[in-house]
Length: 201
Length: 179
Image (cartoon, rainbow over all chains, first blue to last red):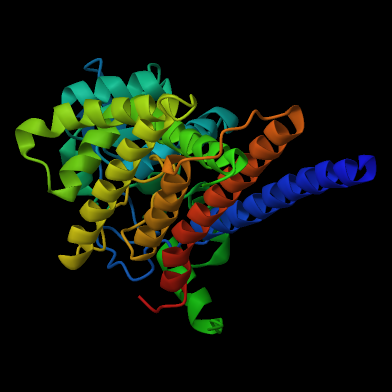
């Protein structure tokens, strides 16, 4: 009787552990799916081409200070186009913030539009009180941003170095590598990659 | 007549599932209201009321399932709620609105509406029926309690795993270009 009880308890414990492992595995598959989601590979990209001088525009930030975009500066600039109504933008904010913190030679500018109250909320949530945060649809129009979240990298001389729709941290990081890969945009790179890869079915 | 172990583990499983469903709805009220609006079944003026009432009802059901006296009543309400959710999903599926978020498992886990979700609700209904049916009157020794709790844990874990699996399916189909 004792042996049966011990065996039963042991089996239950092992079954729970087995279920946990199964759950972990399936969860990992979900994370993998989120990571390999295509970066809008078929998107028609508009606006200034990579390698050309970035459009020059001046906009006011939240404290009414003018911010110059596209001019030659001491540091490179990362423009992050977002909106409080876009959920993926929110999930990317920590990653954008960490890029601003970790690299000293990049200025991060958040370009947003939409309802002013929503901005206050998102700024408080993401801790962007000290960040350069523009509420300016004009900047988005100048750069012809059709989809969000979108990021544009401009170097010190005011040349547009990389741009693309960013859906994950990997996409964001890859903006900095786009130059090395020799593709004009992240989208082109993804397209070139996927045309060469045979998809198993 | 069911053995009390079966009814207890079914009730515990359902209780945990309802409690977690209520918790993510209460934690993200704005998200849940938008979700109700997306289903387009509740009148605009009632969205705020439904957004508050549904998680509270879920929480009450989760608590009610824990005690023997209230269990059958809570299970009936649970069954009705599960059927209502299934109906809401079914109506939207019939309308062909497969692109809206299910809103089933919180904002962190998005998944589009799909027929598999009806199967999921059927499985929940089985748990509710298990908790609802009368059980044999007998006192539960410690070992029986252990078995009931262990069985409930395994059921909850497998339920969550199945939920993840369902959520992954559309992503896989999209990747293979079959959607």
